[in-house]
Length: 343
Image (cartoon, rainbow, N blue to C red):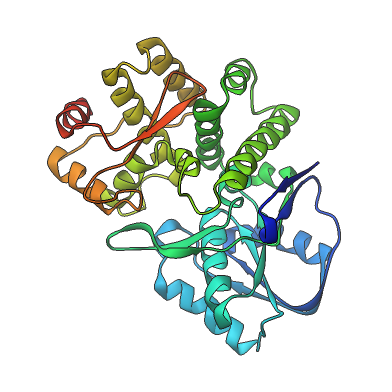
């Protein structure tokens, strides 16, 4: 199956199937980590041919999504004498994809890259749309660029080696898409088990189609694309507070969705029943839905470091029932604080 992202000069295809043979008439560097390379690198190497092919292996984990690791990738590119026609391959999860894309965006002012995502989260969300970046002490993805890949190759067979928690983290992003944009898809998710291979393929395709549709309308996140950050405003604070080593990104987003839902219920735009249905669906895949906030005021202040906040106003993405959402900076501090006290 092929899904196209239509972005005028930056359009590209997302291929969802067993990996086909891919040939590049240039120098290619594969960026990966020890976990992914141990499971899948031989398979990828058997599918890629290039003028010159090398691999740079970076540490595994969100805590390494920083400037030091970015330098490792760039140094390898210089050592291999990559030029402006060279290409990077992001081979791993969301961290690998974000860092490889960012490295590609700044190496010699920008070279091409392709995504070969190996986690469910990166297949349904992170690999699509051209967001790249790294974290720093102030928060998540605060340094980065919009840099679209030339193609995305999604091979669902790679998910067979995925740990259960990583699988759940990806499901959280699938649920996010359904709650914000597609009520029918949400109802389908309630009645179909994603541990079934065919159901999973359907869910990946539906998620990618949804994201492609959104990104095609708003590549640089000036409007509707911000809705894809449902759960992220809260989730990024949770990740930052726990130093990126307690929760997987999708797990933090799952908790963040529950917090956003609680705000939506308080404002009367989501019912308690709808809130409960989202919680039940997340918990079906062991995605955490609760978090103990130690300092509510401090948690609230972290929102101002969010990239979506403007003019000292916090932008929240809130569900309107199931299948719709709103982006608003009109939520009072009192209402948010009251909801946070419930956690």
